[in-house]
Length: 131
Image (tube, rainbow, N blue to C red):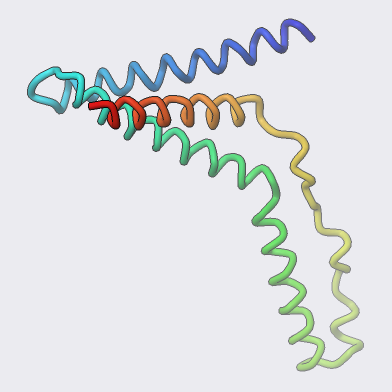
């Protein structure tokens, strides 16, 4: 258990390091002069992109799209029952056979990616307000 917590702490630091490294590399490639303001701008953009990626992973793993698929199948089945009749529509597989995710099992990178990106973005916003 302690090894797992240690690995999670390393993931937080890893994502912070990678985001800072990506922003420094992009600043070196695209910016003409190295300045603190451009570094803050690059950090905020990279952290927002990482935050969006983490939130997309969070939503997909939570089963949000499974619920949408289930509701679309229910509506299509109700329309089909009206069109074909009760006997032919009951021959299909029941909706209870569909797999549902409860969202309790997440990849270990989900929360570190979201929280480290959020921390970096809030930090860049506070620094930019100070300037």
